[in-house]
Length: 346
Length: 274
Image (cartoon, one colour):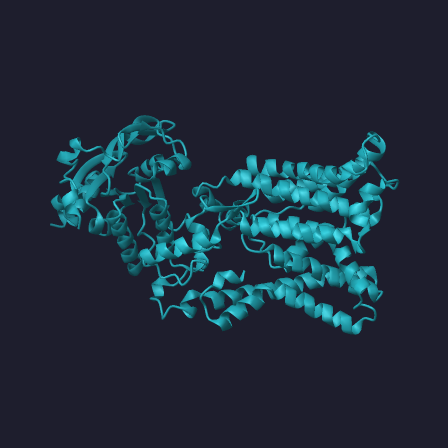
């Protein structure tokens, strides 16, 4: 957010700009290293696959980013995707086979949104802790997936598989979805009242309430939005796998959703972070995933690497925030020397 | 100062009967279960005047301002605004009437910019097809003007509020009242947590509000600060108004003994020092 430094010196502005986009510097650096060291990494085909690979998890990262920026967190997004995919899959293939396959494209985001609204109701209206609420719904979503079907649905309609699995003019449609959702979410967060209120309740919910923002309502819509994105992820996973197994979007998915958002500079304490940063986090996950896949690293080792990179990213982020605050402190940049007792509070 | 336009105030201004008060509280009572917090509080605030509401902890000052700003409903009693009876049921109704409350530095969001904080909840928007987009340029411009007006030492309206000092944070909150043309600003202990320079700054804000003909209810137990700017004082003790004084009729020392008057021990202590 370089617009936060309108009148400081050019040098400061460039430094802050680099810090704000540090995730992109890291992502591009790793991309360059892999391009130079891994044969066939830097090819159009592989780069496209990298984006394609990152699309579904990208939806979950955006969902988690929104939840975190609003001062909440959502442990259930990944399994929301799983349950949504399984529920809609069963609906289309077993329960009500008369529904056309393309209807799933609308149904998945809708069902995901409704599951998210359950979280929203309990956090917003009943005012329960988001960790506890989404922990409960995570367990419920997770096991309901197995309750309704143990195994995989494979005979899916081509229309349902299209968004996540097929190409349009030589480009995977999932990549188009990734960029479109990125654009919409960025616009919502930075340019609309709703987005401003997400940041406000995450920064200081009490103050937001004093200024007439309906905090319970905002919480409700944040979780509903996160659930809707989980529904879009369900659609992309379904196409990617060309089937709906009970294990869809399970395992690491939820942790990678957190990792992508946090690596991208979204604060666990609410209020801070951007969709541009989260997008950088998504791509870093994509670069790591494709890079390690191409070097035939043992999948177990890849998991360890993911964890180590997250820890490293958190360390870098702490250093980044400290440095950024030091650069932005107005007393350094513009004030001669304020009296000690007028110094800004931390 | 603009004393000529102001009624000669003593407890309740003599000419007041001729003027319609901006806010009139009549026999306000507030009970929490079987415990009362306010009893028979009657109080008027006239346009453009600064009223100091003083009293020790537990006097009922906070409860009273919560009722006026729409946070709590009163148990009994009536409120009128510009002569019309009103029911203040929420913060939004209070703001709709033109009552803004500045809660020290508690009502700002540190990680939002100065401009975003001033306009929070009431952002100007531009239409963009069927979408509404926050008009950031307008907010920035207006915030810059307000900051200059209030002499806030803020390098940019884009600066995050967490980098502001406590006094400046209150300045940001007061900018809201100025921009949205409030008629009454309630300041809750505005100088309590501030250093000397911050106190000066806030007292200047209050003088600015008065120059704009905005009435001010300055709630505090710091008599020195309030004596410097208020036109009139209302002293509360244990949920009731025990005295009203015009500034010209009272010194800080007299206010101190009034504030302590209700507490028998305070009076004795005061006498003992003589």
